[in-house]
Length: 437
Image 1: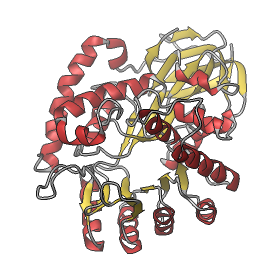
Image 2 (image 1 turned 180 degrees about the vertical axis):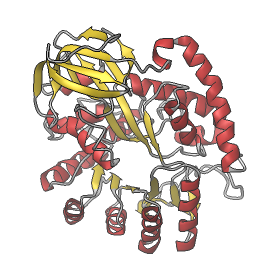
Image 3 (image 1 turned 180 degrees about the horizontal axis):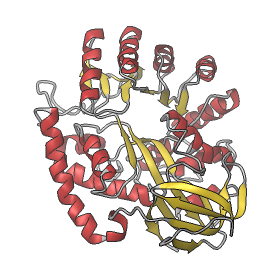
Image 4 (image 1 turned 30 degrees about the vertical axis):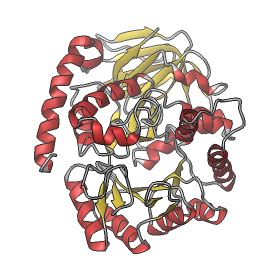
């Protein structure tokens, strides 16, 4: 067990550096940063609203940012600039997933309890570096990492290692351990006589939740996440866990420090309490009532639906696409449709880790299947997601001055979002991470 935050960071920085050496040796074109300029020509560029294509346009990238977007031939090419002819391929902003768990891997490979209890912290962190790389290579250039699930503060080390260029991966917004009510989270397979690893940090009472929020912020959290509900023992129904007073204290302490709050909430009462407390996002939201969805709309509380995770759970239990949908999946899709109709703001959050990292675009496909237009689903993974992160001024759009995070796909995703599954090029922070042309 790591005994201090500073010790944890030092340990992981050393570990990530060792892994980074292997990553750089394996593929220098991905790991080595570059400040050089890049001109992409003959492209179909998604407009700033995310609704239409600017045909036969060029994009100039300089110093990690988009310097100019203009019709072909209208941009003066700087000296020593590399030019790439995209042959009318489609260029979009880098995608954003607001709900991932890099330290988890699919539950059909190993149950969640076994991952938390039996896999070493070192092994889980090394695995997470490969998950980060798969996420980036799939076109997701930014993620909000919503809890290490027993992995201490490894997400902070991953975030910093990626930001410093040690390993390839998406830009990470970290929450560290997440917060749960005492006795209301797993693993639940241990004899209760023993205190074993927990999937999140436990707290009871207003004073204690404030203390833990402060501790997680000091450890490097960019966001705070808490569990508004959970089943209190194996086989029990999901119920609200933290009181309204405790939730209000969590949100107030985070807001005082300038951080926003995400709430895991699936039950009607858990969702209601979290919305009243002032959270910025509801994760899952499967049992939300219409009156609470209306409140979310009015308060601009964003829903991250995690439809792909529900689908994955059902496939692990034997359901196959084409068969009658299980009740849990039908309910999640129905809630999404009601939220969309009511006008709740929705952003892409997939819960990757439950299913394979790199398959994050399945969430976008499911949002379309449940009633979004392709343009709306792409905005949910770009413009809307960037706004949730308070980065709407430099992420989520293709515009001069914005960070050069972008993806290139062969076919038109405004017609079929499935084309997002295999980008032929990924540029992250102004440098080419993937080139499959």
